[in-house]
Length: 622
Image (cartoon, rainbow, N blue to C red; front, top):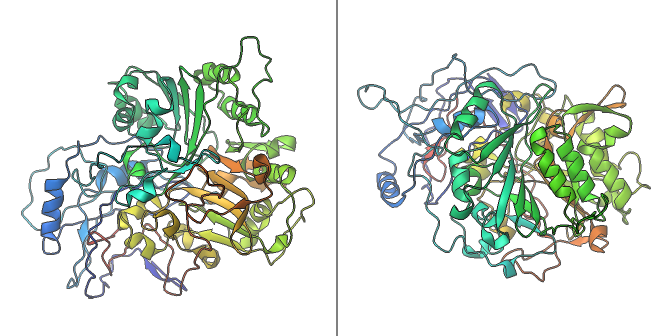
């Protein structure tokens, strides 16, 4: 199968049409693998096959083996079989061969188990697939032995140990005005990690003496997660909120057997193709309580060389005994909204935490909670979740701006669902209407002058990234979805983040914003787990009288009014972070750069074998 478009020819056939070109010299970058297919896609059966070519970089590989010393991680429990397959199976990369005249042979798997992805809203059930990486047939066949395969596509020696000062975090260097932070990235200048956070920082005594915690997430590597807690906190009670079912649930429980302090809460997923995609930490300290809403999974790959973000709440103190139930509320109604979100799980395991939150003072919160929970909603409940919740908050708590129609909408994400046959089906209709809402006086439909700019990595972005092609495993836009919506690609802009030193750290963060015509001011900013999909944001049904949402998602919305400002100035010098800065730290460069004629959006289940990545590898799914 092939598809010609303005973005080049795509193929998922076993053709032998690789060009014989001289490869560029691979960059010697430390990179991380994170093969995290997020959501709402439906690929064909895919087997990503890799092989080693000792001719290309033997010294580099030898050096890597000798210089990287990392304990072999266990297989993570994924939010989908795709994530598990991609993490544990890609052990032998395919090296680029400039004189190769034939494609690497690929084998299709029919056995069950693997690549069980959530589908787009309007597609049928996803196929069951298996992702298996094969070694090249360069030597006689050996008897197959059972070995634990690492999370990394490059083997156990892939991750570099961070330098000793990597985890040094100075609270004074952190901007506590917005409390929006990026994750630290291995392999970039120390300057660009000053004021950023690693999970070890978040869980350290620096932020409080931990008593109990809850981890809401999509993908877990439990042994790795436990190691991120400091030794003195590793036996404290932890609840993992997940969306696993059947075999994957059993694997998750098996992972936790060595840790009697870990309990589980299974999120109800009653609508087909929905996922538990929310990423949140609830941390109860001796000193109080804290909430972290973030974009990273609980696997090492997500905290290594990707651009990720989070909102960290202030430390919430305990209310005095006998305080009324309405006490401790913020001007943004965050406490009530957080409790509503937790109650939507209908989970006895969270009841104690709901009571605990009621006993704390959340009045210092300056962000709005924007969540999604699965269901079909009518009447006032339609505005409780998804993009209609965002529309309601923007309508009630923002004001129209001058030349409003010229203020751009920007969406930045790492996964794309099915948008329909043309833009009027969802994107430029109900979703754009939400994103262009500013105050109650806003027009019912936005002017054609308002531009929507979508930021999604190109093939070249991925190829030249710190991780190389494996970064594309966390950008799961499938050809089956892409070829049905070629119209969408005219919206695309590449990933460029020089302002944060993260141009080569592929984004897993998701952000949405309204920006002035000169890109210096923001009317609002949202960081969330929600990708560009109807499953995440919801879609109107029954002549706009019903909202249907498939997945759990969570994010926080920044509005200038909550900070006594009319707009947020865009920060020009994000790093090193400064506690005195008033500018908002947008994580990528503004204005975004539109795709060139040569750029193509990253499609994760087609081959890229005409040029090597930063590690001398090519990408060969089949």
